[in-house]
Image (tube, rainbow, N blue to C red; front, side, top):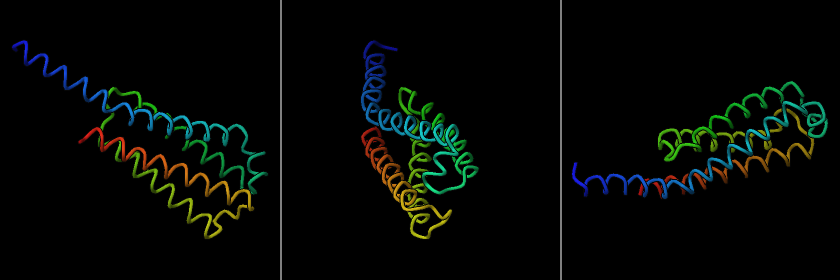
Length: 143
């Protein structure tokens, strides 16, 4: 391999790493918020359930899912250049979560009180926002 081939190869890696920085940030924020929310549901399911007027067992189950999901997104965010395929799965999961949350609030599934309904809609907005930011970060990486 010639010097110019070596420089070009490492230059591309540095460029990809630089282009991946926003995506890694958005994935990392998603991971922290999601895992943190999951841990709160796990640790304080009773009080949170009382506040939202939702079943504590349901919140614990959601907490397990969110904690594991958050850790997996964190692993993806820790990659120097996150996998485009894995990032697309995260984006799709976030969009699905946001739509399901809005449907939950609109149809009154799980019968939350007003605070619970507002919380569900706020969660949908945050998760949908993460998806939009991740789409933007992925586009910068793949352009």
